[in-house]
Amino acid sequence: MSLYHILLGMLHKPASGYDLKREFEQSVRHFWFAELSQIYPALKKLEERGLLRSELVPSSRGPERRVFETTATGSEELERWLVSEPLIPKDRISYLAQLFFMGELEDFTATEQFMERLRGSMTTRLAVLQAIEAEWMGAMGVGDEALAVDGGALTELDDNRVFHMYTTLRMGIHSLRSRVEWCDETLEAIRARQRTAAVGTPKVRA
Amino acid sequence: MSLYHILLGMLHKPASGYDLKREFEQSVRHFWFAELSQIYPALKKLEERGLLRSELVPSSRGPERRVFETTATGSEELERWLVSEPLIPKDRISYLAQLFFMGELEDFTATEQFMERLRGSMTTRLAVLQAIEAEWMGAMGVGDEALAVDGGALTELDDNRVFHMYTTLRMGIHSLRSRVEWCDETLEAIRARQRTAAVGTPKVRA
DNA sequence: GGCGACATGTAAGTGGTTACATGATTCC
DNA sequence: GGAATCATGTAACCACTTACATGTCGCC
Image (tube, rainbow over all chains, first blue to last red; front, side):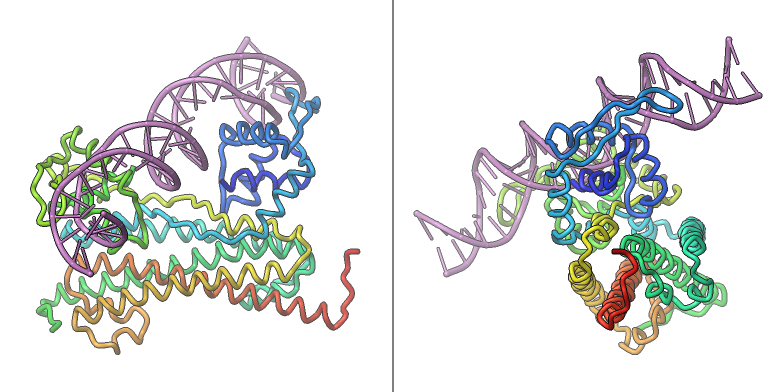
């Protein structure tokens, strides 16, 4: 599983399960997500296997925290994973399944609505990622004009780590933008079909 | 779960578990996949719930086949799902996780290789989908010139069902194309960094 | 005293994968 | 006789989700 490796990656600096959860929601949520109820047992197992060690430290506010850090074995394992082959997940996209079978409904307005809703969610998500991107750019003192040209900002980044993080964000943006484009293309096609149907043009082809 | 609904969708016409597996590998694999060991119990459960019924029929070659068809309750359930809200999956992309943490490796050629491999897999997959698209176009007697303009072919399709199927395929193509573009953008940026480093621009960190 | 953020966990269940078991028919 | 395809399944396990249990501390 990758969750273990992701936790190892995050534990570049010591953190508690609760801290890590926050990081999942912030810096990493465009490509991974985990619940606390999954994080805690995972950390426990990593410790059992000797990839992490932990100690209880009192919290400034709230109960005691169990803070984890990587062991030598842990960072070896992390490195092994980092240089291993990329695995492309076979994704299960339920909304595409719906769309695929929606032809049987014989109701094009249903399809149209469906696509509009999809487009809505996609644009919202895209806006979130773009906001994060803008924030990063601002924090790094890179001028906005660098953002104007697509990808043009990349060569401006000088820190190795930031470069890698930023690249994954770019992937999310590319991906969502192409989905919105796909929605538009599809909506366009639906409307074209509705127009010809309304005019009464006989279904041609052949 | 959606697998149940997808099976209902596929059982527009009667089929066996084995048949359905073949369909997963063919018409549907760009958005869903299931093993036989998952399909058989799922069909069984759908029958128990009264959404399917089955009978054993002798096969032309090989052992007896259990052929399923939808009941009235089954197609009601299918319809309910088809008009329900689209759910966008939160995806877990392990290769992005690798890339995200790869900054700690301090080895840009590793990143470059990684991106090249990714690009390779993506283009292969893209080619597969584009081949399917071309095949469909050929089978439907649509001229190749319709394919030349992106999405231009859509309005030519007159069959409702084909339209919906084709649209899901288009999404796969859009998606993969944007991923390849992202790979190129990233590789470009890596090479730009390597050039400036080679020229002797001092690394800030040290 | 109650609410909200901090903090750690367990238990039951779902969805999916991997490995295994079994057997018929066809073609070489 | 053996391999390939057709055909149906079970069992063990893994990854993840949802629901629940417990308790601290600070603030209003």
